[in-house]
Length: 295
Ligand SMILES: [Cu+2]
Image 1: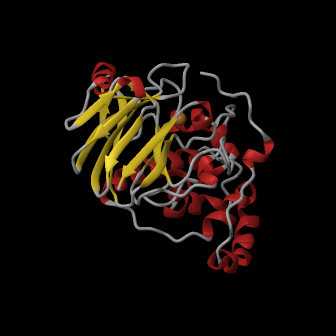
Image 2: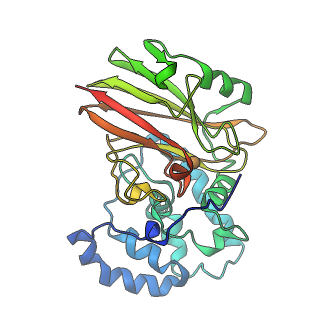
């Protein structure tokens, strides 16, 4: 796994999102908190301006794991744990780190992870993969994952010469393996690599995502735009195409198996979209493909 992909341009890492009025109003208060929090200053300024979604029932167990992991940092007497500790361990910090059905984790949009979490590592995907290796949730064996990545889903037609997978019905379900062919960064779907996926409008889409990479976090997000504007950080310029169309990241495997998560959404608007791995740099390295909703 090449932790430092070539071809990054400095401009790709700039944060071009617009500040909302709500966020602006909160800036003054956020700066005060940021001073207290020291190393987490930038984190807090950005995070406090966001709406706070409620956690779904499925994310509650993740949140419990998250709080316990962050508590270990706190107990270790990390120097950053001044005013930032409660915030980062709380729901705001959880969303900052883990994302939601509509909000990207800030670290996948170019904000640095807190230094105390990075340790001696420098690659955010590797750090998150390691921190969340023991996170709760479904696991699959490597053999079962390989079978999922090769399986042609019900109701789908494989067009191998076009590298395309086409669904005809309104019930769409398929599995995606993230980075099964290391060191290549790509997705495996129905035996294809980064295929174009075609579904009819209003299809109810369920995607099973498995992280098959031994030392790296990966995710799968369907974006409203292509990746060309910000190839290193696609989520800085592209919103989610459909609410819920995101598995922001999965930790790397352990002896318990590979992490698996499921997203479900309705492909309500015809158009051409992209699926990407939102971890910085991964789409640029090849973890992306077209997602087409026919009218
Ligand atoms: Cu990835």
